[in-house]
Length: 161
Image 1 (tube, rainbow, N blue to C red):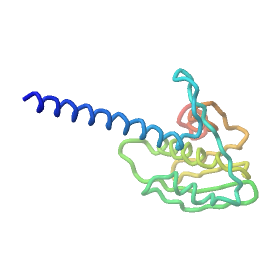
Image 2: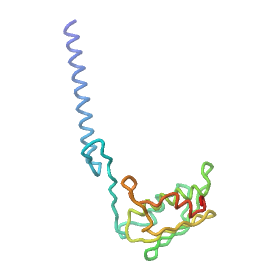
Image 3: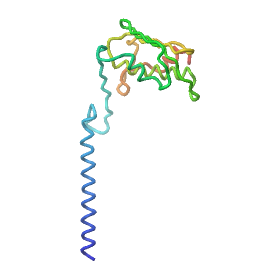
Image 4: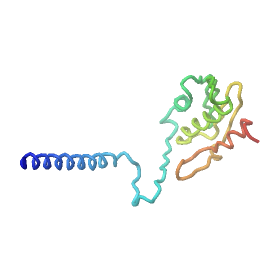
């Protein structure tokens, strides 16, 4: 009986040790995925913004990636430093069309602010309204990086005064 208890104890310790090492290995494997390591847990990680040259990316693809699956990109143009898009929003029972447009512009501009070589982004939302910002109107913080404030987007759409 003592041999059985001893064997069971050794097996349990072995399993716990193996599990503990697996967790350390997993944490080690995750470390390369992070872009910045913090020295202490109380520090907030800073967002590292990267910008790409426009010849490396397709503006139209970025817009398509940041609209809803059932939304339609009706028109697109990229002339000089001005990007223009017309989007027909899918009907949504949860949000008003103005709220949907506000959300979509925020998403689209978030993707495009990571790319250089454009100055103006104008998006016309069919049956809702148009929103246009110059790149230099973007705000920046450590958590979100560069963005256009949703309150300003909502104001341009007439959602708030």
